[in-house]
Amino acid sequence: MNSITLHHGDSYDVLRDLIAQGIRVHAVICDPPYFLESIAKRFGSAKAAAAKHGDDGAFTRAGMKFTGKTWDTADENGNRISFDPEFWSLIHEILLPGGYVAAFASPRTGHWQAVAMELAGFDIHPFKGWAYSSGLPKQHPCDKAFKRLGGTEEEIEQWKGWAYGAQAEKPALEPIYIGQRKFDQKNGPMNIREHGVGAINIEDCKVPNEGGDDYHPANVVHDGSNAVLGDLGDAMKYFGQFSRDNKALILNPKANKHDRAGSKHPSVKPISLMQQVVRMYTPPGGIILDPFAGSGTTAEAARLEGNDCILIERDDEYVADMMARFADDSIPFTHVTYAEFDAPVDSGLDDLL
Ligand SMILES: C[S@@+](CC[C@H](N)C(=O)[O-])C[C@H]1O[C@@H](n2cnc3c(N)ncnc32)[C@H](O)[C@@H]1O
Image 1 (cartoon, rainbow, N blue to C red):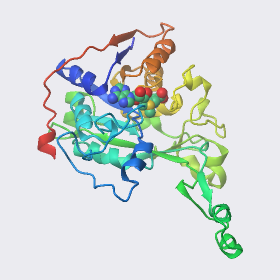
Image 2 (image 1 turned 120 degrees about the vertical axis):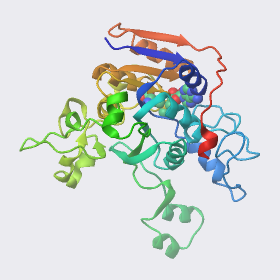
Image 3 (image 1 turned 60 degrees about the horizontal axis):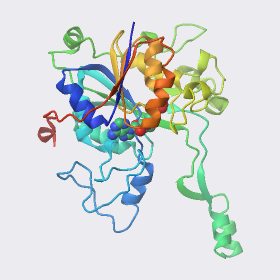
Image 4 (image 1 turned 90 degrees about the vertical axis):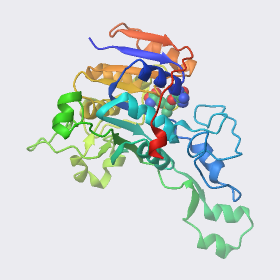
């Protein structure tokens, strides 16, 4: 029977520890912090200095102070784990050669993450687009703004129907960045034979077609909602749909009560979506790592797909949520409270930068 091990601690520390112990995994499937707030603060001002590499981690900026109050803001040194090539080099090291990482990201800040992944040595594949219908635009209508500013009738009329703001369009797509550790054997088949990873599961991820042969999986998955299908109804049939029980036209918003399992975590992912990602990138019986476990949806998907899962989460509340989620004993569950461990690890980063 497959199992779940939850490490309660910081991902940098736990990863170094696991690597030093010789633990290796077949896939990394994760949903890192998006750092939406801090990016705006960091680059939003005219006085903001350019990003640079430094001794305290790539992309950190000299002299910048951050409060680091929540997991979605930079730490006290200004470091953002999702954009740190050093973090991704640990992920690279713990993955078996040929193994895949599938990492969610924000459409606004995910490019930083993708660059960090590439700097750490990953081959970057086309990202997977997750289309959903439950997003709301955050827009400021120009006519109303000009009205408040005492603008002329003409000015107000001219800008009617226009809006400004960081997310003026309805958000409906999130990227899932896909990286692959390079093969360390002569070619793909030899790598797959040696390490058991290096290919993706096309057959089991095909999109059902009632009228004939199932469709080859595309790098778009959607929630099957009316809003996403819309006029594209027929065209969208080619794309993977992860709505619960696989019936078309069922609205599956970003996460529902079932996905949450009682957790109040702000960014719970739909389990059926996580199952699709797990199935595509993990070989049968392979070990999955999620270094940003949150409420435990990756592990729930791994449990349903029959894979072992190693989780890392540093927040006490979410660790408690996961212990509740997996308390039913249907799967062996180990909780490790992490103790400081200073394993000397050569991440190989100096050679990469
Ligand atoms: C976007 S959430 C993941 C949510 C998860 N996908 C779910 O469905 O519940 C990111 C998680 O990473 C955790 N986290 C952030 N930085 C971390 C670090 N350095 N070490 C361990 N966990 C961290 C946060 O506490 C947060 O729960």
